[in-house]
Length: 538
Image (tube, rainbow, N blue to C red; front, side, top):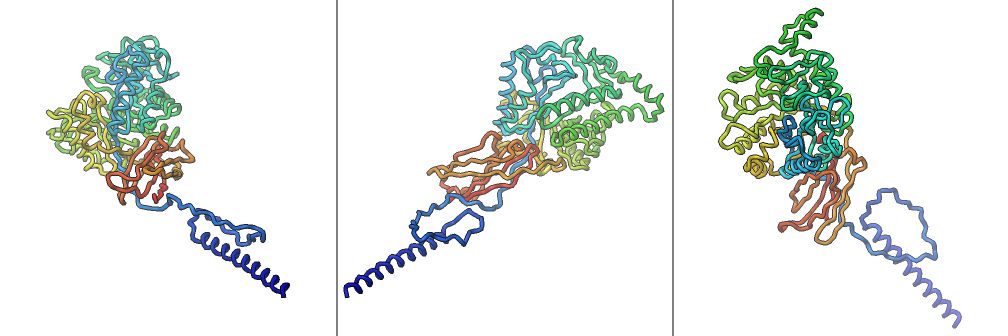
């Protein structure tokens, strides 16, 4: 009897252990079935639990974020540029005898001002008159930089490289502005032995106002300027090349006399040329513009080419327009360049007031838009520094508003010049509190092809009242900026950030609203957006 009781107890005890083990296993499997997981690998159903193993229930960790798809708001876009002229020390450097540190300090102040007032581009004059504000083996250091043509800054540095680095740090594009045909400026001292006016004297002519000018018809002129442009595009991390309105010189430069190009004209006629002299001159410039456009993109497909011609093509175009004719005086057929798409952006200098009788701003802008057959960027130049108006800041603000109405989502403008922003106490506050209140990306340039950006990765960590947010991209060298999206109570907010910012503490509660989600996009140097990564905040 005792033996049977002991055996019964053993059976009960063993049965209890088995029941307990089975119960634990079922509970554990139930927990596994309901726990959210990010592991998308196929489970292995052939795993066996050793008989002597002990199964322990682990506490379940609920993630604070969840990747999801959503509809993000459209990012604000507008080109907002300013010209910075070096010729005659108009803007930078303010004098030609500044120390290197003073030059750098002036540059930093200008760039900080542009960034703080929500600009996104700088058009910086690096070749005012066949000279260089950068290290060059083709042309000499500029008189406007050091006070003597050919003399390097001391201690030596590369101003263009400095401007590129500092602009990009601030999320600003850097466009290099070159004057293609001016060989020497009257404010540039006497031409010395290193001046291109002397070194290339066989293709340079002296005008009656003391300026020196390359002959645009000479193939050697075209080859020389082409080499200068290609050298800059190849060696520097620029965003665009920019030409202004000077092609053949204005008539006043030669005091009304015809441009002195008898040698090249006679050579053309003697070779059987049949164009009129005016058409031949325009043809020289047309071929040069097309060549530069193609050569820039052959070197770097993403570098844009922009021109800012005089604002009137010909009087009477459109009807009622009066003024100078760049077509007849400068031999610049700017309409053709826009028609053909030999530019990526076009900034006609519309330097007259909205109510100007002979050159009304909106009428001219609409005419240029009607000639934009290839849908290139049309960003007018504004006379911010000396527009004829009793209230310049309001006039410029209104011109920006008109440009937006005419140009829509591809709006933009370039301010002549940065002095118009700094020397008028009302100008920057009027822009910052009005049309430039929010930051903007530059409009996309879809005809310039580039490799699509990879989707950035978003990391978030709940720190109590804040969410610590970090992001990265595998190909960060292709990234120019970031756009961070935060959602409070269902409403998205957008913030454009510079490349070097890779993290941010985001408050979970703001103005009585709760943070619901965070998303990040990468932006390339042409304004293209990557796909986004978005995460919900628990």
